[in-house]
Image 1 (tube, rainbow, N blue to C red):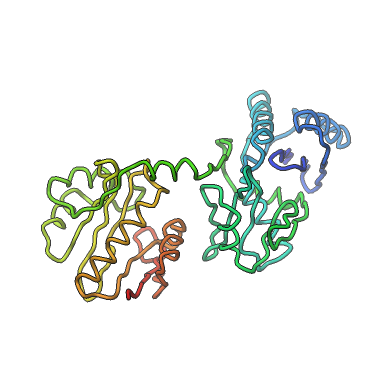
Image 2 (tube, helix red, strand yellow):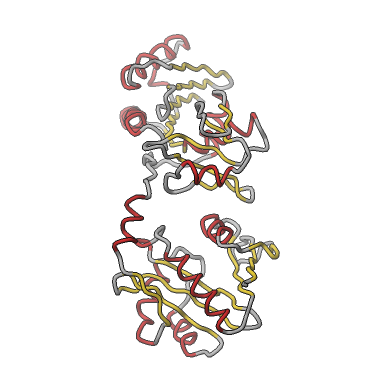
Length: 348
């Protein structure tokens, strides 16, 4: 197997050539742009290894996050190789690569970060054994709150943080190439949150109790929510009529864009919660949960609970942030074999 893997997403340019069991590499910290140094280095590597670019079976490229220009250069080059020469081409997420490097140096590491634009950071965090990559840039304070006192793995020094710099390892890059199967080669550009914050500031948000006329809107949001078992329209209709349940909807500029279903027992259980994809990451789920907590207190109930897939790290982190604690873990709870985390929060 002959592989050529390119990493142009960072300040350092890395090129790795694998010929069966032999590994060759070139790195460059030149101040020149990667598009000026990359191809000459590839030519050097191929010449020293005495093979032709046509002999390469598989191509790999780090697709980001990182340098916007660098990512475009690397992805465009690998696409050209793939389209012109054939063979397999796969993308590697830079945060996966960084975390793999960091763990080799420090097995206890939990957080890695890449400095982005405007003093923001691309961040990944080990949560319950799963690497969660934040879908937006985080501020320095947000990163510090996540890392707490633990050192953050980084590609280069950052005096604002308790950090350690990872060391380049071509075998780790090859291992990431083998573990991940992304053949789309779509660049990863996580966005800043300013636009999202402006969107919520300018919009009018209202939460109200759902009625029968809201059934269609609730069902459309449910269908668009990524789930293994989607709630049927008939089930939602029955819930609307059941005194042991309560549904609240959130409206953004008078349009229903989210809902929460509550089951009333000796505690309030969040049976389901969903927000339209176009309106996520602007705090609407948090507002729905706050409304559920107020409903519980109005009912004289001090405990609110929910169930979440262990692999649904986005939801888990939200619930953890809002004060929910893991009550127990249920192995193989869902029909597809996923584990379930039962979480609970005691209200004042």
